[in-house]
Length: 260
Length: 365
Image (cartoon, each protein chain N blue to C red):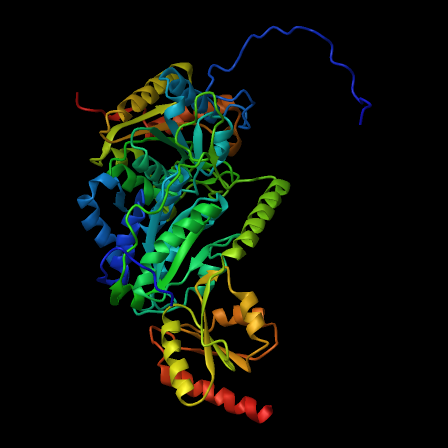
């Protein structure tokens, strides 16, 4: 094994023009598809954790879905939950560690289909956690099947002629539902489709972690996101799709804000 | 039965209540559960008693389902807490997904199954129909639980401590497999000594990573087959190591010519069968597995060299009998006698069956 089969790398000093912004995010490439919103939200979450100085006090719960390996990127203690169960797992953690910061990270199938009961009851109990809900209207990891949030008429691999609302029901607006629950403290819908939206999302995440300290209830942040691969679009087309088709049904903005 | 010297006066308690009190004395950090007959007394006892013992700082939470309970347990156990849940058969079925994850992630915790008759909604009467589910894994994938089978209210209380000791020693979920009769009946019980079970916070627990230290991850996901198989081998090696924890009780086995094998409530009935048989001059012995996993296969194999035949007595359609046959490996016949649907066999009907087998074996012999 001593013989090298490759050429020596030339000794050239490369100038570093970009580096990962945070210690809390591992310096490895994301496995996400080009243009996918997951990477941005991962980065924002860990930026916020680092800026608030709570990396050692934060425990995250990863979902089942494209972001199943969230703990490969986020350098905080984490638990991998079963599909749909992240908020129950987070409840278990937070109840025994009430002074730590606990967040869940789930997609639409995880949070709004298989985990609907856990989601609603976690918020109804007002668990002092942050729930991050990535809504891209599709099951990305399993290959682009219909999600509870898939738009009417939207083509997916299990709605090949478009979502037929008369057969499978209308898209579930989970965040509006959540905002009705007394245990919800801060409920907002944000997006990651342009730099301005990313800045607003970061503010929402920062507030949510700060609110967690108050122990006044659940913070719930929906992120309207994209899935270029699942939607069979280029990243640029997927951004336009968000603006044209997602926003009319999923308007961005705060839905429930704390009474000052 | 060995007699232990206990400091405290005995109590007259229901099995479920004794178990719940033992959990408080074992200093659980959390209990998550959902009501179901015949075990609701456990969550009722805890929600009633725990507020009176504030210094213990125990979380008791009624979840929205058994699915939520078991996943709350996953989260809390992963955070290094001593956690218990309890349910009865249909609820335990709902927990199987979570149990598979807990076993895979190697989280110590205690599950109590106060078994009722099935399948389906079944009956609320006692049964041992969940033996397969408890001892063969229960959920998906290759895994095992440590399974303890009490046969008295005393053991309902004691096995809470034993269950946590074993679970924490092996980083594995443990189950107390009991039944509706043991849960509901009242007996004399010496409660375990308060605060006598030591507790350590494990370094793998996710409680916020140490400054400058490595991140802790609780997961059961190993996407590369080579890595997954390696984990499978690690788990199998652990289950192999657990075999040394095997526990059983023997009654009249020294001179036994016929051996009854029974666990839990059935073993109480079989003690009477031994007495009735011996009055008639039939040398009946009893082996009672206390741990159902690990199973006392070696001892059964030894006893097969001594007895004419064995009979597995169960409150189900014949489940443990398969493990007895595997242990005996054809050395002697292994018969089965069982009642189902919440029916409990009487000593007389068991003895009648035993005598029939004895008659036949003498004719053949």
